[in-house]
Figure (cartoon, rainbow, N blue to C red):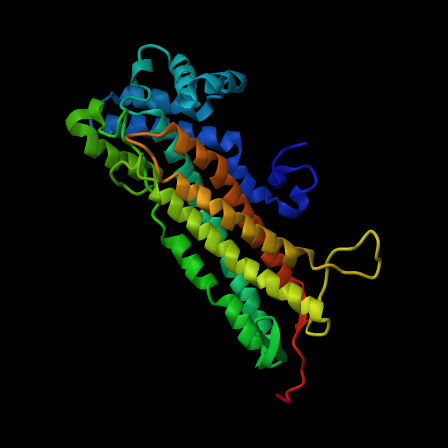
Length: 352
């Protein structure tokens, strides 16, 4: 039993997404953190901060290192972050004479935020691909049923006749924009050291940061450890995506309620009424859209990030952002299923 519906033993069948979940597993997070440490060593070796022998050895150890997870859990309860003990374990594994070259000039926030950016970059690619598939399926429905007639409704009341194409275009309209925004996002390296000044790297700081960003495939920008707009912007885009898919789901549920305006396959059964075929996927899209809309205010609260680093605002991000990503992943998965399950939309009667 879990307290999150997204990885609940049975609710996850409705609300989960295994592909996206993998990017938020502890294993993926730690792997990204170790990739940061190996890349940092390579970048510092390029600029003579540490030796190339040290960088090679650190990289080799990072590639196979498996930390003691129980120790990390205990240390996180004490330190508030996992990195301090992870680096301690890594330095012990690296050993003399190169242990002092591990994590040189970096701080916990650099490792944690950069791990998040590398994983979100992969998630954004996944989401953009799903949006493209949803848009393609809507185009296919338009080609098949676009000339069919629907009753247009305003303020929940019958207005004038429209075509199925009119409704399909409304569902499709925002999706290409969201896909483009996801593919154009810059996922920045976070590298600022103890207080954002990279003080331990002196004159090499900017050059090392640029090389580190290149090693990790991230954007090279000045540290943003206390300016969290990059996180809030991503959360906002997630809410927009789920909101538009929620509108799609709401419309499908209402079309199903009308009875003769749409034909769906699949659907959910009732324990009490065997004749029912509930529009479960459509309803869930509405619920997930509303979930993300409520979570977004919390992400905006995390913008109040005091001074050079905030433990409170940072922890709030950890609580909320993964849930928003999972909700959006479920929305995209369900929308893909729902578009595939539309067998007919509108009426072939052309008397408008």
